[in-house]
Image 1 (cartoon, rainbow, N blue to C red):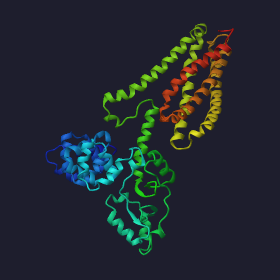
Image 2: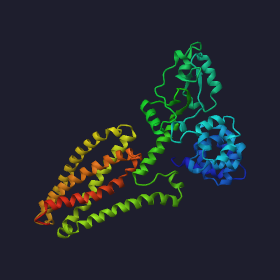
Image 3: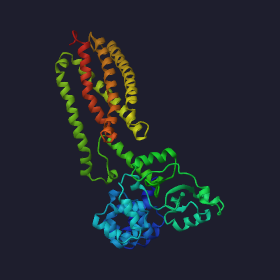
Length: 461
């Protein structure tokens, strides 16, 4: 049943809150670290610390590594003291350890790092930006000399693989200077004669990255070349670590969520929806709404500018929502397509002219389609009701021409804005649908009443 996992987590939470933790500790061995992280985050702080202190070291460290940053797992490290905190950190893969330690203050960080033996590996990862390949990689890799035998490589796996075996995909072959020379899938080592040399069975990596590269670029490369892990090397080709697909999945989820929220017209959330404080949620949404509201005030200004035309031909006001919504919708479509293409690396800044030419032609065709529909709607409805008066054909041509202009302009704006933002160093996803719609609303009114003043002059105007 779908509710079974939730029921199990609620039961575990109840067990954790009892004075006797023995039943909880018996059950927890069979719980996935991600589920245990959810249980811990739901507990009161005092209970959470007591549970962490009683859990087996490997179980506790795995659960802490799975907790969201917004749930503040670093607070638990501080609560259990630097010595036990260091044991928990040391049990984690270096990338998770670095992420957790990075949330501590400098003094607290030093107190924990002073107690761990692989301090150098964690500190090296802390030097890289969080959103870079270096901030994403783990230093836990199995590497062998290229001139070693397959038998020696298998023995190296036994000696070096101190992490989850499910994360062991391949062995990295290096030279005497530590430069990456090739990779050998573990399966190939198993079926190859132990006497053969690693250099004879290794293959060149399909892709490798440097620590300064952006994590989104790493995700695109791994998706493009369909690899489960990618080595990270420095400028001299020395092997620093690796990035695995499970890390990239987290990146893709985080980046996609951020882009979706921005495109919806609000700041990105830094925690699950139900765990974001009410005041923080309001602040993240109010800023964008206020900016959009101020933008929409320009629409009222534009309406006031054409007040005389509206007074002479009130019928024009009937089609204002139709005109501006069509422009906003076409602009939102165009910006969505371009932002997606940018995110996938399908287009770059130098492709802007090709995109604009393509979207201009698309906008004209779409405007003709919508204009034709609007023209037919006015003429057919007038034939039935006679509501649009003796100059209904001129009104229909006004709507027809306006839709061509507004839809074309909206499409051009929606496709060009992401390029402008990228060129200025901003996130193209900030070209949100509400933002584009607000911009096109104002210009749409100007186009509509300008066309009307030309076609209806001497009749209704």
